[in-house]
Amino acid sequence: MDTTRHNPTPARLLDLTRSLRRAGRVATGVDRVELAYLRQFLHDDVPCWGLVRTALGYVLLDRFGLACFIDRVEGRDAWGRADLLSRLARRRPGIVRRAESDLRRLAVARVRRAGLPRLLQRQFPDGFDYFNVGHSNLTDRVLGGVKGAGGRVHVLVHDVIPLEHPDFQRAGTVATFEAKMRRVSAWSDWVIYNSEDTRSRARKALNAMGRVPPDVVAYLGTDLPTPDSSALPDGLPPSGPYFVTVGTLEPRKNHAFLLDLWEEMGPSVPPLFLCGSRGWNNDRLFARLDALPPDHPVRELPGLGDAALAALVQGASGALFPSLAEGFGFPPLEAAQLGTRVLCNDLEVLHEFLGENAVYAPVSDRYLWINVLNEWAEKPKGAYGAMSFVGPGWDQHFKTVLRSRW
Image (cartoon, rainbow, N blue to C red):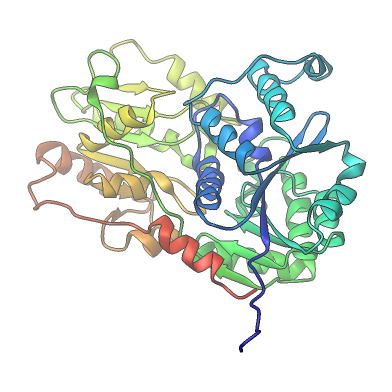
């Protein structure tokens, strides 16, 4: 009789601190990755837990609590009322205080910050895998507590743009990001990268910090919503040609370049929709946008829902991405999958996963950009044949990540 036993897969502990802090906001790329991991862990037949840092300490969620959490984040259930303890965190937005209150009600355990190591040791006596995929809560207390409790640390690094382009960042965030990367270097058992380009850049930074942990590259997946033009504001989409760009209005996205092009192309240029909220360090761009007359062809459209945004992108003559730096780039990937022509800056990371499914033009060549825009405005996007592109999927991502031998 064969009495050999296979060791069961260790429990998974997913850090959801970022998702809590961004409660009530439109999900960005990193937010969506954290939620994709949560959905996958809930789907798999492996014990899964959630760790969240709140204003008053840490809460631990079991599978039931995780399911309730994602239902609230994705709008299927509403956040509950703020409890009395939330009054101690008055500086946090009201929706975040309501979310923290719900997590305290759902938690199977909660502790003050100093109690985290003991909580992890008690809860996971046989070891566990801690996943941090949102760049939040990467502290010495958390990572040291995980290691001290016999856990293994897995971190997804989305980019090292704050180290390479500090001028694009909010004041004070560069030092914070560098400290996080030093902790990744010191504590991580396994690092997950979203592209070969990110891995190459991050390895250089980690090497300078003293240690390059083992790693794997796993392209991120996409969950394309069903386009719904009825969800768009009145008057959209326009009847004629138009262009879109998707992304937060922050310096590295280079929206000023597009505004320059539209001024240069003259009054008959098609509309350009800037689909994204205003970010940081961009006062000059914001002043230019605020000074535009009401009938100007450049228009901001922040806060569109996923289905409405997909419909606007799908109907566009082209999706434009003059970004100066990217770690991955969800918007161009999704635009290509929606069958929309993509014109983007000549970045290596975009070549990596878009291949021949985009037109690459360096932002130093304004003449080339204008030529392509004029051509696309005159010719319907089906003039060159139907575009069919299937990007990387979450199934392959998780096969790569969860079957890797760390």
